[in-house]
Image 1 (cartoon, rainbow, N blue to C red):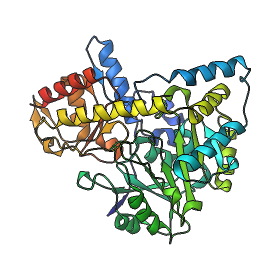
Image 2 (image 1 turned 180 degrees about the vertical axis):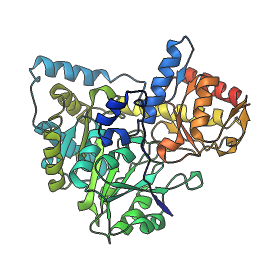
Image 3 (image 1 turned 135 degrees about the horizontal axis):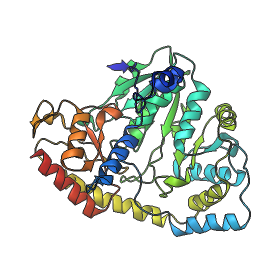
Length: 415
């Protein structure tokens, strides 16, 4: 079964404005839902400002610093005068490095003129939505999904069609589910692997089984978000774009934020059929133009130098995963999968729904997370924001000490 979603108007952070302001704001912004991860992070800061000791496990941001050799490359680029505008799709030298990376790591053949560098992978996906979607076009989103997918599709005029997978299937959608969701209005399929929020990783065999379904639908293109590629605890990352039957219909999204701890640098990129890359460059040229010039030079160094720091970070996340899974297993009623990538755990908390904890009724994942914030002073994100209301997301991009303390507080609050 799949679901076509039409969300009601969400007056997030603007319902206290005066009536004239409400009338003047566009329908677009009134209908846009606020990012749940950003909202929860702000609520945690507000509570902390009141003097409470709050541990935030809400944001998807590595707690490691950008490796020193990458920062040195940025400093050198500044000294060498890389302070001017770049071509809209990115410096040629960086696009060449990305082309080599795609071939080296993913068995993908994207020429430099098929690559667009943007201000983060999020902008890459937004560019695609604006470049490809017309009103009413359907976009199949594999759920649980990253919070911004849904709203980015709607901003482009598309209709999100959500296919849900639960913990019993490791949160992975089956080929039969995908086949049943495709209609004559389907234009795109959008998903991530390793997945935010579940940490699940599709194997090559699983991806190719999905690709086999798509092969017969020539009008459907795939957006494969692989931003967590390097935070992968399996033997090998797999890209759906390496399937020979649909390789010319796959747009591969990646970036520097997660694997290189470069979130604040705002550098993402896509590899796509040339006509799509050209369209996205056209869109980007009217919004932001090129990404930061010296940052792009540093990205070349990141992609083409020793990945030792990246793998060390991955190994630290793997160790934290085991710690978090062990600690969560001690909480009665909470069920977790064993994620193979990213730095999230997505426990099923349906056991707690309908229960009253210290006078607080838990009806859904939002109630659950607000309860934890107020009672345990731990910030996590409700699963409803990811298309899975029976779950919630923990980011273990935090110190082991904070993880032990936070989950200890959660256990006490739920006892």
